Image (cartoon, rainbow, N blue to C red; front, side, top):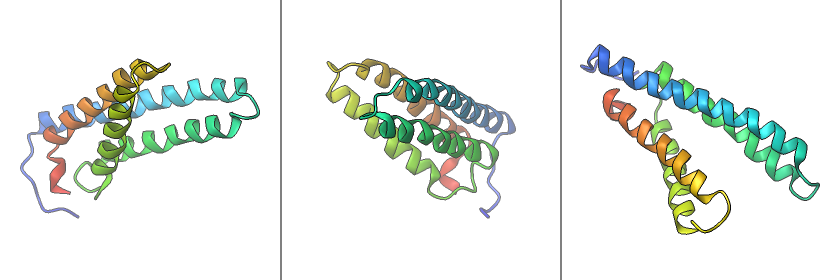
Length: 125
């Protein structure tokens, strides 16, 4: 358990709400992924399933951070590493299909998570 940290209740509530929105949005991506699994070719089926089920993991990570933002060691960092990496990769291959979509979506959750990190004092984990 982390030591007592002086966090504005309003800032904490806003940060947790941002994290909850990221979790809920990711559940939306999971729902969309179910259709992608149903439409996937045999060659792409496992990849689509892996990707879709990973949305549940990310929704869970954001949900756990929303619940206890200063008690989840390493979780902020795992989210940042993955979401920044995919955003940078999408920027590097911006001419590929869906790259712009990933830059917008993953870039948005990076910003939302970073704002929540500051508001919730996430570094006190």
